[in-house]
Image (tube, rainbow, N blue to C red; front, side, top):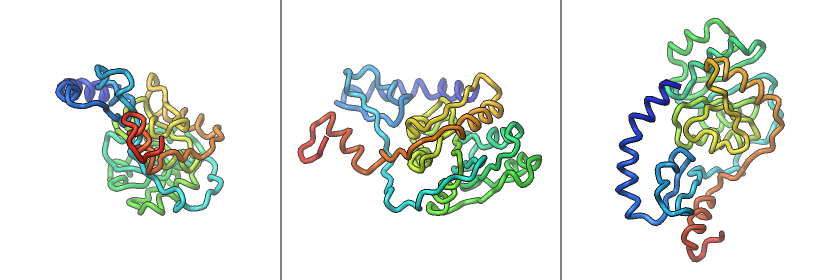
Length: 233
């Protein structure tokens, strides 16, 4: 996409300079996603590790439930690069589906205007606390976060932990956080159509809950590099 290409071009030079200065002072780099790892490529093989920064307390989550069919959830901030607008526009290609939207700023006027053609099929929840968001995630069939450049969005990890497929774009760290639950949209098509196709494909999947984003995962990553005494590999 043009916006992502422009962002990459504008930030690439500064990232290369920062990495060039840092790589002579560090022994190991921990990247949040594959895109970030590329910037540390000059380091020795094995010294660039990828690890999530999410530490989720799965024991406190609501009881698992079967999702409501043909429901998709967006949970995030209502900023342009989160991709909410094309997701709303994707409803044109998703007859019979309901889109739930939660997060700060997601009920702003541009989004409500875009949702008017779909009437009661787009439901704005506004800002919810974490427990209510998890409950909404638990009953939705698909989670969608078509963000352009999130580094490591915890919401994608939470959706995977609920056993939900995560529709995303091939940029940033959403797919890395969702792991095997990522359903990446084909951006060669117009974005609303690409997202609609990915949502439809995602609903057909039967996925177990992925609960690997725990508080000790980063410690294990560090132990791999440094063999820190007292930390189990």
